[in-house]
Length: 347
Ligand code: PHE
Image (cartoon, rainbow, N blue to C red; front, side, top):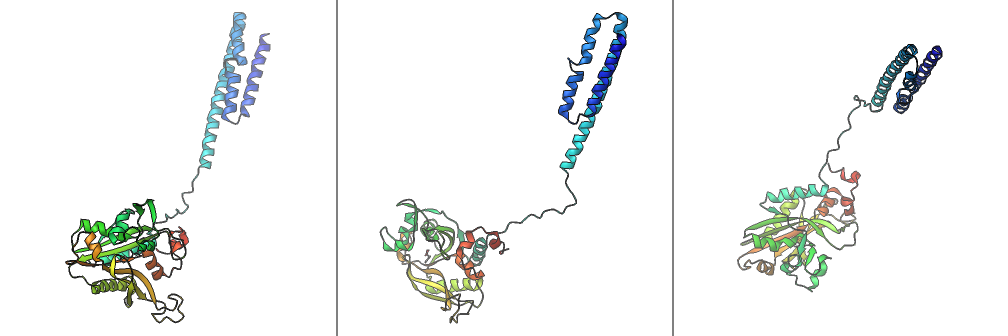
């Protein structure tokens, strides 16, 4: 009877150890532990039945059962350690990094071509004594138009296809010229200032028109300024931003806030001004660059300056247009298309 029971314990032990050898993961191991070492495990049932046996039998069976339990517990702990070690090795293999691989180079950022051209323009003009202002893009109709001698209902408003934020008084500035009134309120002559930034127009977008574009607007007011100062300043500027032998041409043009008004062209770099069948200037020999003129007396007056005492000149130019000429770019939309193949050329 006792020897039968001893055989049974031995068999239980062997079966448990056999099963343990095929346990492959933590979950199966836990199931094994509950089955063979848990409260309702067969060995524990044997132990709780011992009380019914005679003392001699109780001791023999008790010792054998406890020895089996210790063996199973030790085997369990060994298996647990093995599985843990294996899991750690697998994780290492999975997460392994090859530290001998060459690093991935960081792509350094660079300035947008328009920002580069703006900085170049400002550098040249600052060396001539101009200061830089940077003013609001959301502007009052008063500064965008009225101060500039363009009253409401004036047909000249059609020159700017304006986007209104709160019609009729608040708009997205259509030109950076909209700061002149503000500057005259803040500064006293001599004034030499530039306004740089974005402008917005309700444009049909094509190769030469964008609904958002930049302008650099120049504004100089002092005693005794003449058209010669305008021409000299802008010609010296053109020779630096384009090339030293560039020639400039001024022709009459109309802007309500200047009198006289002019447009400035530069000699075409492709045909050197000869024209003919030049594809760049389409035979004109000249490329139109900017609008300019002598500040209209009414503008000075609206800004609280005496036109009998002061005169001034002003101009407005587009960095996009300058960049297109400098780099031979055919389509203005390339600047804001975010195509890295285009942008990366301007290192
Ligand atoms: N603001 C004008 C435009 O956007 C350009 C300009 C500026 C002309 C200053 C004359 C003087 O068309």
